[in-house]
Length: 362
Image (cartoon, rainbow, N blue to C red):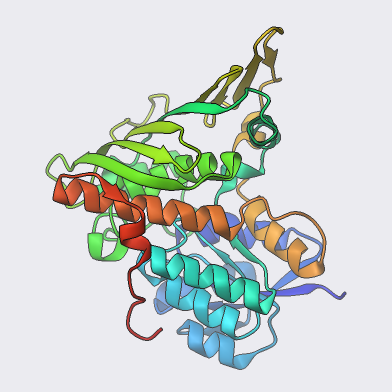
């Protein structure tokens, strides 16, 4: 087919630093339209990247037509409506993580994608690495026997985002055009939460993609440390396979300090140790020497251009969806149950949140 025509909804930090440049450098597509209700961000992005079709919102972009797929890179609470409307308009979609904020909305998008046979990719960049694929193969091929325990830790540098001070990280991330707005991550009405929605979504997205499992019950404790959103989370859970797991996470790591994102899987016949940020992997099978993968380079660890290019390839009819909607929806229901558990101080069965109704306008 001719080049895939891509529209991008959202011209903030992530779109302008990663998605748009990555797509413009990809020979199989053209970025033909941008949409954003912020006229300053929209004009700046259009001029910088040479995109001439601009719109104040996603309805106008979709109504104008001439697109094959849409990248949704806006604050969390707006994901569902835009992704739903794009799928209904017959376009493939990349929606940034977290996929959406409610389980009912997540599974609705899954069903719309299936029914229309349109690609739906979620922005889980860590899943596009060779070590992630190796870990997934080891787990789904039962190389370590039956899974017994998953232990996760995600310690990251995001506290200033939750404190309405994104400018603290300007020297770290080198925002090319604009950084996040002060309320993007700090206002729970926009973000849906803090560390859970921003970072645990990565780690549990990896767990549920790699294992092919779903969570059945969650017991969570969360601490805000004076913020409006959670900064520190400790969550225990049960998988539908019967395995149990823990996920601990904090956003309190400071600039210049090392971040950690490790997942440990223990089975009846060995274990898998995966470090997402460090880019390492060990597969230990009982009765054999440990398989220690060659560490990934800094460029390999977080292939930020891969998610949008995956969408383009799927529209072209080639490649594999390495960040599919089903495990992403399972991650949404895990997180919704975790926030309810922390709020109510009790274990929550995931079935309690998957029965929820869709929001207004659906």
